[in-house]
Image (cartoon, rainbow, N blue to C red; front, side, top):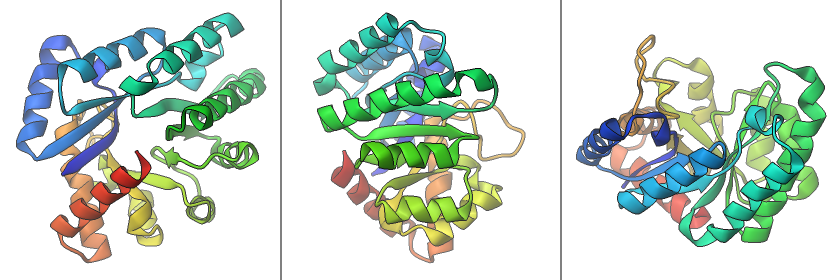
Length: 248
């Protein structure tokens, strides 16, 4: 079975989502793990998981959204996740984003620590965002002793990629791997037993310049892994399915 371990179905309109899920099914996609990024989004992804058998929910709080919230609001989101632990597959999307607003970095780190501890408490994988904060994310995950980790669309150096491998965490290969030399190199250096595929749809389309990516395109990531690892597409599919069952 093909798996999209990270996307944002709730970014699409309701009438589009039905068609997207149907198209994904025709490609052989069996699991679409869609991510929550705030209170409203978490509720939406849960409702999508209830509506469509292939859709699974991850509940989280996007780092740049988190910094504008009060401690009380963050705790409400954490309580919501606790209450819905049996309806979700993972904590995500959470992490650090240092693209802007340097003053808020320490607050982001503290919030990230809370979500790592929550993932350990609930024994759920944590799906991690790490824009321009790749080394810091790894340091905090090691500090809090996270075990079940998926590094989403990790753009850090290959030295940091090796650190992730050594920690026995997982990395995702997004669909823009079709033209991204970085992610092609990640496939080369990471054992297949520590890889997943993702679309991050509606972002990271496999055709450069195209927009509105969708889960059905995750097959392009599988194809590139198969090509670089010099194994069949079926072998790739089976191995990543094993990874999913092992972690989730």
